[in-house]
Image (cartoon, rainbow, N blue to C red; front, side, top):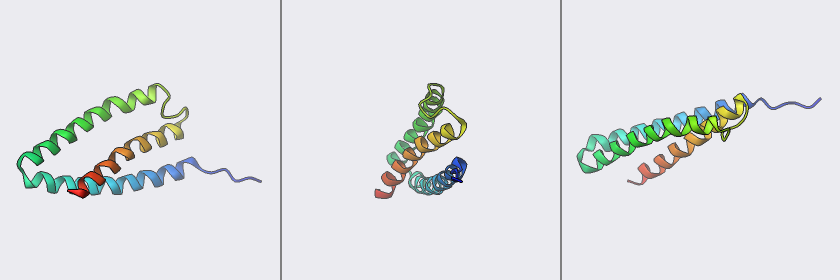
Length: 96
């Protein structure tokens, strides 16, 4: 009998990992914003812009089927899409 892989287990792992990366980004952004100045304002502007873009982009990707065609696929596609952005922010903020 072949074992079927549970798609939700992998999704849970990716969501957990993204949460860890996101908490790192939050900490790095908090330090940058707390330092004040033009760099802090630029980070705030970037952060708000990213949130607005994500709020518009992710639903559009889901509606057009680009994230997948069933529940687990859409959830995994959403996490994957968002995690790329989180990872890019972590790399960028870690260099500063």
